[in-house]
Amino acid sequence: NAGVTQTPKFQVLKTGQSMTLQCAQDMNHEYMSWYRQDPGMGLRLIHYSVGAGITDQGEVPNGYNVSRSTTEDFPLRLLSAAPSQTSVYFCASNRPGLAGGSGELFFGEGSRLTVL
Amino acid sequence: AQSVTQLGSHVSVSEGALVLLRCNYSSSVPPYLFWYVQYPNQGLQLLLKYTTGATLVKGINGFEAEFKKSETSFHLTKPSAHMSDAAEYFCAVSEQGAQKLVFGQGTRLTINP
Image 1 (cartoon, rainbow over the protein chains, first blue to last red):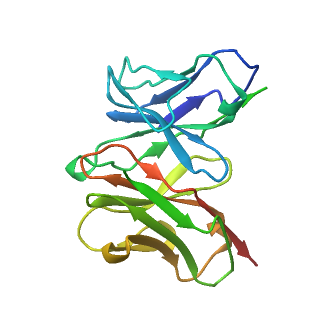
Image 2: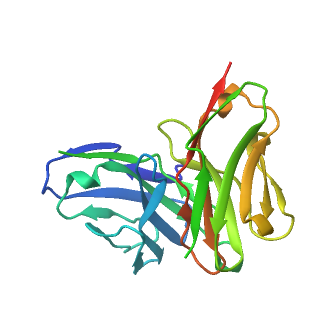
């Protein structure tokens, strides 16, 4: 029962470098999303996907790309890392809830990224 | 647009005392409301949720919350705090028909022995 798996758990980048945070879920959930967590700001939605081949922007999408080629995987790409992207990133998956609203989100353990 | 405000970024209570974490929301349509808990160095996990029906919702670990539409509130309570309740708590809202979940800023709960 792996649930949502994120890799890597820790990463240090230099400004301008690119990298991909991996996220995989084994619960056959339709929906997946990426959040960033910063002190005093809660979790903010970066991008989300309602199914393979379908993605949309959240609250803070600039500087990030996503794709969803399979139900299981939802990688988050940082194109050119900036110090403002230093954060803890969480991937989550869920099924839709009643009346199409959000169901319970299942979170990975997080990826802590530092950009120097 | 939806938003969530959690009153108090840090709450401290004694072991055995009442826990009250406050959450107010704004939503233009009937909301779905959630409380999540985050233990150190872990992801978030669901404590409880309100979608429809009974406005008093019971969750795991003895927590409960009451949806009050007139006050646009969804406060989290526990009658008697335990040391293991020390964590960060997040209130969240989504709208019916919408997959986006909007989180509050979080409240860090400390339990004093």
